[in-house]
Length: 76
Image (cartoon, rainbow, N blue to C red; front, top):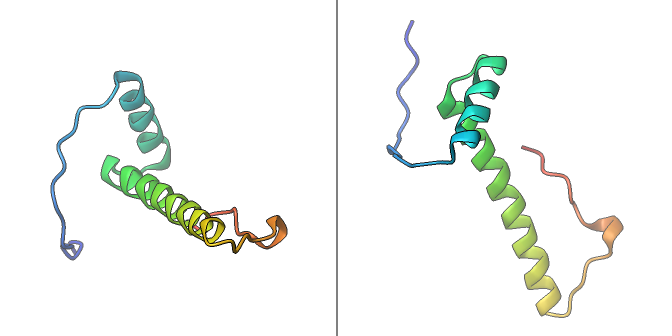
């Protein structure tokens, strides 16, 4: 039974050759498509970025968060 099609957009990019070789290596080792690897990497990157932005906004507002309460580990 084929997979359900998801809402998507196409992305055509140029990346460094070494980065592409690593993408291929991870894709093959994990048994995942390049799309899956890139999507997971982007999800992790954006989750980390969003967390850091929240911390910066809190710091700018004078609401610093103690390090032991900061969630530095992404759940992605």
